[in-house]
Image (cartoon, helix red, strand yellow):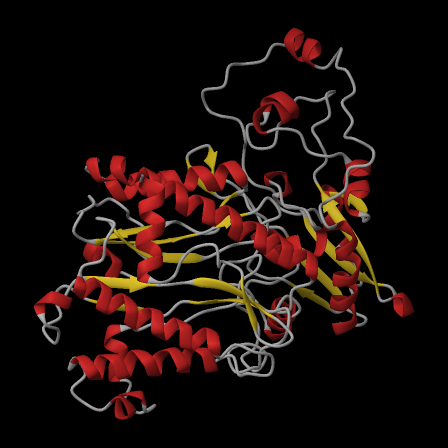
Length: 483
């Protein structure tokens, strides 16, 4: 059995190739090997990760695909990013990893033997390297050959075309990271993920909950580049304010930094001015900037190793908060500070959210927005305060900006914090412009403050401390950058 392959990869408008040109293209090419000492970044971390996964599923084959290319328009694919579980197990992060598959074959007392099935570089004695728009080297760049891929990763490598053969005949019990590669799903008889596959996805998430030292360093690098991107945005505000789609200008400025320093953004940048900030995932970014309003900027750089930052700041576009803006901002800041104070090993994951929401509910009650006592609003059978804040106050952070999402509840949202976990704390107020329960001066205010933190042995370290959080600090910071 061979794996099903995608359709034709030549364009309908391609010029015909004569036999003479084909022969000429196949000859007289110099060797271009990769450096013999090149390895994936952090290569010493990956054998231990695979061993931990192996120990969770003795005697079973584990199939972890990188994923497939997806068409954006006609013969153009979206930029490819490998699945985070594949990245975590191999260290391979590039766009050249499309369709590749890691298989952990059961090996008795030895646990598992990892085998990496890859599409090697386009040979120069065939037409793929210059005729195939999807995989050809002249079109999309060089891939490692099998020996180079083995040196990069320390894994045994096989040609991708041989994967189908390994999936025929008598098979050991097999789990697949289903839903990642439709062709692998079909080849393994998985029209949809079953319970066993769900357990594999859950364990792959749970193994990533606690970050090792190298991962924390990569996350700090992502945060540091993100801080620089926020500085770029503030310096660009005068030009953005003049543009009829200033939100797009802001998005472009930040995304330039993300692309220059890393793989790109961790997620689509949210540049929300005025009432747009009340839309939690505003990514249209097509509005003008009003100098009398606030800008909510939620953005993060993803490193070349694919670790993500996720930071939000709400900035006064005039450089100075109005009294009402400051009042709302300082309530959110107090909520965030309460959430951060609740972070420590052994604390319940939900504790920091509850601490932040208590501050929000009490503040709304003090303002008279909540017409019931805060304690009543906080009761599980009530929750009326959520009209103005709605979402959770944070999440795990790592290779995905919402990391470890497949982890089981008892290990994540209903679990306890451990040293080495990295997470965000990001309470917000979203006071809708058409909300008649609000006084007019509060309508249309959207404020979120989000920081990235790593749990330490005795508390938490604020990784994004280089960005000011207080209203006074933000005003001084902006003034310095705009001077």
